[in-house]
Structures are given as structure tokens and as C-alpha cells.
Length: 224
Image (cartoon, rainbow, N blue to C red; front, side, top):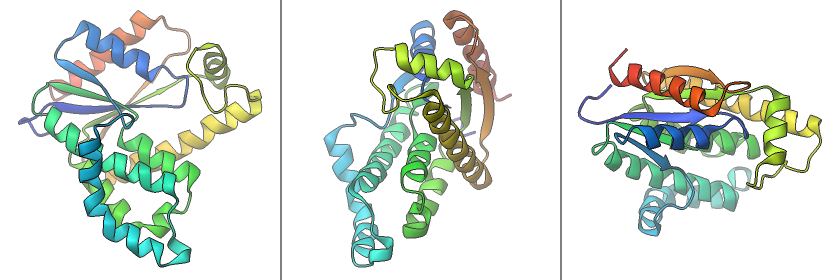
């Protein structure tokens, strides 16, 4: 890991696993941790800056019907580029950066909803993997049983695409994202030196889960 900057960690897991709650819990206890960075709500200047290097990719895709990119797909590619710039800056100011829905999520989201993106924009995907492999140090895969995820999705205030879906649909949704996460984590691992940890949140209290995550982060921050 580059000791000239903080350790960059992404919390990954299906909806309802508790990623956001854990990130908030850790930063509330340890002020050296910067959390709250995500793909969503990024500053417009950073988004516009991220568009420029993507113009050749978008133009190439536009003139080849077999490689045409959807707007939602391109928007996610732009967000990922903007987040990369922001994380690079923030990692010079903080000892630990926690990402909630960062590069692993973004690439997995694209794979989940646009399964052939890697075929339509292969050069962009290789660059994205390489760029993040040099910056992302740790992935903590947070998960829980399908029944627990379904119960949390249905009862929390936050809206979700499958909130009113059947158990089978929620289970399939979670399984699809787990598969995509595994693929992207493997790609980034091959391109860099990614450390992957796991944390289950089925039955543990929030404070216990926060303590366990803090222990993991402390180990990684100290280079273990």
C-alpha cells in the first residue's frame, strides 16, 4: 500500500447488508476515517471533468450499433471517473477512506444491468480496473442471509427497487449482485494487490459489527 496516502476501503455487499450504517458508525467513533464517499451526488465540475476522457469511447460506441451504450450505463461510467478523482484527492488528507458504493459496486452494477458492457467498451473497462487497482487497497464484503436481507429491505425507510418484491425475487437480486461482485473483485485483485475481508451482519448488534469493522480497518491501516 502507498504510505503517502490513506488506506482506501470499499464496503461491498447486497442491499440490506448494512454497509452505510457501518460506515457511519466507524467514522462517528474514529475521526481519522473519512466515510460518506459514494457514486451518487458527486460535484458537477468533477462529473464534467470525467466526461472528457470518455468522449472517444462514447463516440466509438455511438457509430457501432453492436457496441451502443445506454445512457444509464454511460452515466455510471462518468460517475466512476469523477469518484476516482475525488478519492485520489481525499486519500491524501485522511488515514482511512471508506467508500460505500464505489468502484466494485459501479462495475458490478454495470455488469448486472448491462451484462455485455465488457464487450462493448473493453478498453474503458480495462482502464477502469487498472486505475482502481492502483488506488483501492481493501474490500470488505459485508453480507447476511437472504431472509435477513429481505426483512431489512422491506422494513427500512429507504426505498429500493425490490422493496415490494417476493422473497424469491429479492433472493435472486442478491445472488445476481454477489456474482457480479465476485467477478469484479477478482479482476481488480489480478490487476493490483487487493486485500479482501468478509463480515457477516446477520445476528450481531450494530455496535458489535462496528467494532469488528474497526478492528479490520486498524489491521489494514497498520499494514497487516
